[in-house]
Length: 121
Image 1 (cartoon, rainbow, N blue to C red):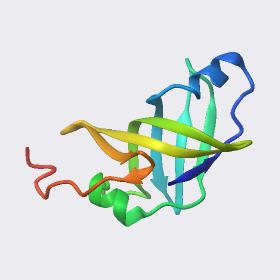
Image 2 (cartoon, helix red, strand yellow):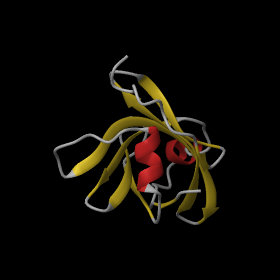
Image 3 (cartoon, one colour):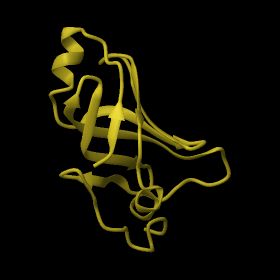
Image 4 (cartoon, rainbow, N blue to C red):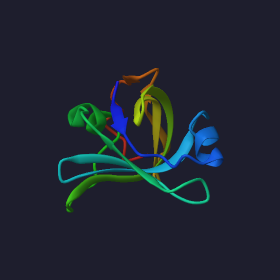
C-alpha cells in the first residue's frame, strides 16, 4: 500500500471529506516525487508519498512524455488513516481524456496492466 504524509487542515469539512470514498484531487509524479494536491472547494493540502512503484503505475496508467513530470492527472482517492498525518491509499483512479477513468489501486493494491492499445481506442 502506498503511504502518504500530509498536514491536513483540522477543519470539519476536511475531517469529514477524508472519511469519504473517491476524494477529488490532482495526482502528480515528477522529479522523484509523488504528490496529491487537494484544493478548494474541499480544502487546501498537499500529500507526499514515501514510496511507490513507478513501473507498476506506468504499466497501468501510461506516463506523459517530454516534460519534467510523468503524470499530472485529475484523480480520485480513498484514504485509510494509519497514524497522525499518515494515510494509506486504498483506491486511486486517474482521468485520461482519451480513455476516461483508469483504476490504478484497489483495496490498497496495484491493479494489473492496461492493454497495449491504450492510446489507440
